Amino acid sequence: MLSNFLKSTILSKILVAVTGLLLVLFIVGHTLGNLLVYLGPNAINTYALGLKKLGALLWVVRGGLIFAVLIHIIATIRLTLYNKTAKPINYTVTGYITSTFSSRTMAIAGLTILFFVIYHLLHFTLGVTNPEFMKLETNLHGENVHDVFTMMITGFRNPLVSGFYILAVSFLGLHLNHGVKSLFHTLGIAGPIFTPMIAKISTVFAIVICGALISIPISVMLRIVGGAI
Amino acid sequence: MKLKLNIWRQKNAKTDGKMTSYQLNHVEEDMSFLEMLDILNEDLILKGDDPVAFDHDCREGICGACSMTINGTPHGPEKETTTCQLHMRKFKDGQTINIEPFRAKAFPVIKDLVVDRNAFDRIMQKGGYISVRTGQAQDANNIPISKKNADLAMDAAACIGCGACVAACPNGAAMLFVSAKVNQFALLPQGQIERKERVIGMVNQMEAEGFGACTNHFECEAACPKSISVKFIAKLNTEYLKATLTKNSF
Ligand code: HEM
Ligand code: FES
Image (cartoon, rainbow over all chains, first blue to last red; front, side, top):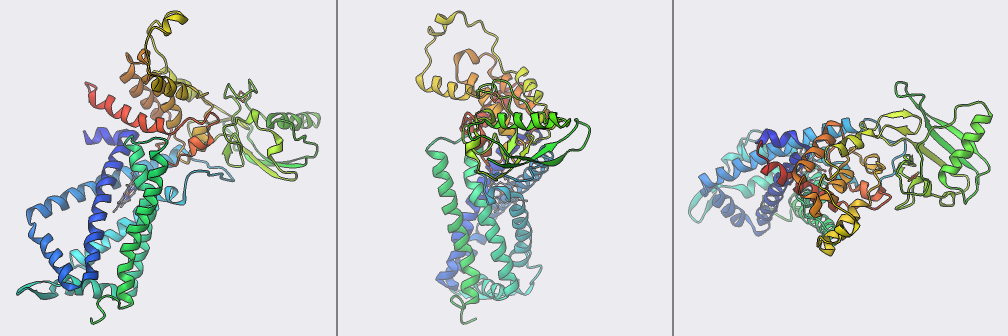
């Protein structure tokens, strides 16, 4: 079934749209969760503990996300390479009218996000780059829990880490600017009112997500958040 | 008007081509773009040079033959207009104009600005028709069709198959063409019998010809001389999905 889907360009696109939608939903949740850092250590540490306590359910969600990401990447890389062969020569002067910088840089933005996500997981989730992060503990209502707040603050105090984060999230913004409107069209939801409207919503959504995520490392570096650490 | 033309010259399908510059000093504003090329060709023939080969037929914007990309836009800068209906008053005196053939792997160059668009005909052969007897003119009026569907089908049927959508698409995709042809039948009762085989056959042939996949840049709609809407591409996606999922062999 999956291989049948990957053999067809239209069905591959539908896979990209469905997995893209799942990733969009994930990004919304992840962004809202991260914004808890503004409410102080207890808020975000409680949230992190809550996620951990989901136990098996957390792994089902993680498994689903990993599967979605893999399909998204396999399908988009295949489509991008295929599309390159379908247009071997471009014009000496290009006269683009409706395509955007976002729409023409989906693959580059996607790959940047991919490299970032790999680093991000090694950094904050698996503790490979900074094993000391995993040992950070704090007391939450009498319970010893992982100190996610301190980990975020210490992590983002490093300008290189914050710089890469801001760059990757900017690319995510570009990716979402085209991706959100594009996914609806691919799934067959289109019309003279809906299509221009979703294009605008897509841009606003991308700016809001991108702005919210980027504000975190900036606030940390300016010591607006976690100034005491 | 005076114009500098940079035109893609290519002897035949096997040789490499290159952009060549020409100067035209007596272009009238009221000439069509093709008449301007006719003037250039008369000059070239008088000089003993090879005239620039380009496709044209009706010269009244209905056949879709006149294929060329002008300053990066298929059929040139004027919206909803074929090259033959484009007039020189849309250009400025002293302007440089780049003229290139429609570009896509599935549209190989035959000579200069002429490309081979037979791939479109082979797609049509896979389902761009109906095989029921539709009777005489009055019989058509005996089948009730909703106003909405009749209008949509007519919008799709406005496609003249010129290939500008493919030429404009950064991916060389033929989705606008195929979606127009598929939907014009899918929307009408006469098109129901072969509905599934049609969409599967035409889409599979589209891929076999090497046309790219849609990434929703919407350049096709902007370049289309008949303003075929990209909403037909959205409909084609679901039409194809439904047909493959309900096909026995899937
Ligand atoms: C959080 C991460 C991501 C989100 C939220 C996301 C979201 C999306 C969405 C919504 C689409 C539009 C689907 C459509 O056109 O129907 C899309 C397309 C695409 N994505 Fe992603 N994506 C993510 C990660 C990635 C990664 C890691 C890659 C690359 C390795 C990637 C490469 C692409 C490409 C090449 C397209 C196709 C572009 C197009 O159709 O114009 N994406 N993505
Ligand atoms: S020559 Fe027929 S449409 Fe231009």
